[in-house]
Image (cartoon, rainbow, N blue to C red; front, top):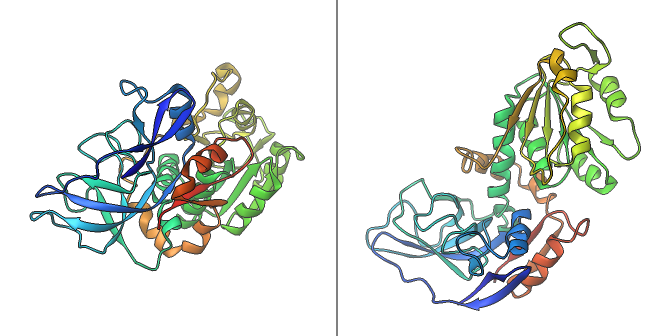
Length: 338
């Protein structure tokens, strides 16, 4: 069967590999869709994931159909449409350094455990939307880490897939007012469509002043004014300017959660923000959220569909990877299979 691998620095290639053979407790999946993640470009750039340089299968945002079961496999049925916990495979992380990747015709789930690696979804959910389950779990984990709750006022920086997913999750938790900040008007329009209460174009507006107008003025722990009344900030952009703006805006005991990957060190003047008693939290992956977010995906299919900017057939997976890694060319790219 065909599979997409990193075969060298900045090189992705089609590779012919053996179709998996199903053991007694295994489940064979036929891939139906796979999203392209920013980390795929990183894996390609460095030539793979140590210690598997030059031989890394790609794809870790899958949606699939169950097509074969081992005699002792339980928990799913042939024909089920499923989303996948790519971190729960016994042969390594799917598409992130493990022996398999979801940009392949078939993937084998070895030693299936009911409810652990797979969850069945309604068959009316479009495959490309089902493929968002993995990245939306990342966004949902960031929201959980933030502690945002009903009645809070929240700000999401970055209207890419993770930021938009976070905005949807925040509203689902009953957050009273969600603002999304970005520099691209087209992304901000999508943010409105998925439920953001307000948007800010940081290339055109004073973000702190606008947040004060939207969320009211607040103080730091010493009573100094000029701070926004926002309770929660989520950095889904990964730009140093975002952190600087949040530190300037943050009121006493606001929470900043960072799921974004910062590729360079960010300078923080802790002396300057000491009085704010800002709570800074990082967020990675989805320890419990991979199937928690599935219910939201099922309930809000139309909203999540708006996150997808481009789809490509599997035959054009290399082109999809190239587009996804080109800055500003696409928001969310999904590969679909026949």
